[in-house]
Length: 271
Image (cartoon, rainbow, N blue to C red; front, side, top):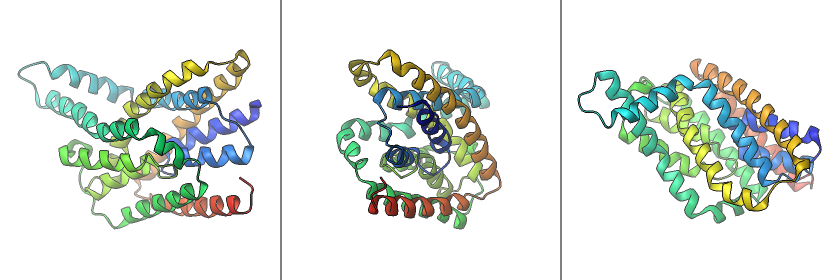
């Protein structure tokens, strides 16, 4: 893959991993448009870049969750320590469904990536989920997330394994339907993304090691990681800003346009 294609795909991954428009769907579409034969090593590297951005942006939350985990083994806790402990285990509960389904049905899910019509259809589903947030009553904060909320959001993430169905968009939408404010639903979704992306990278690690990596691929992979980190940081900040203003429906319009473009481009043989 030539260097400029690595840069473009790094930008696509970084922006769409956290904006509610589906990174998997966009990477399928752009890889086809650019005729870029994306390797397993490159795909893993792009997601690793997004993971680095999450760790940078939410370092304080990660430290708090780690302290919450340690509090599990202590007796008497303060109110704040109990809250951090509960949040840690709520995140764990939320990621279990997609982790189990992702491992059990990985082959079936990968086949879905071969159909651009599936990608286009899932873009439309993402658009519908985002648009319906407009009608939800949202008064609760992330501090009020409970076990039922975590399980519902986790089940939503299972469906987001399909290409074109945004992970952040789906999990955010379920949180909003459960009464969370858009910004708080986004915050919980981002915290879920840290172990989710890390787990997906670890799951692919075996295939990555078996496939190996040529020395010539180091430049494109390194470039992709750097670009993915920088654009991911921009995307995280942008989404939280839009969510704070309660304007997620604008992303719904974009997803409709992406669906129409994907369907037309595939129908006319451009991808």
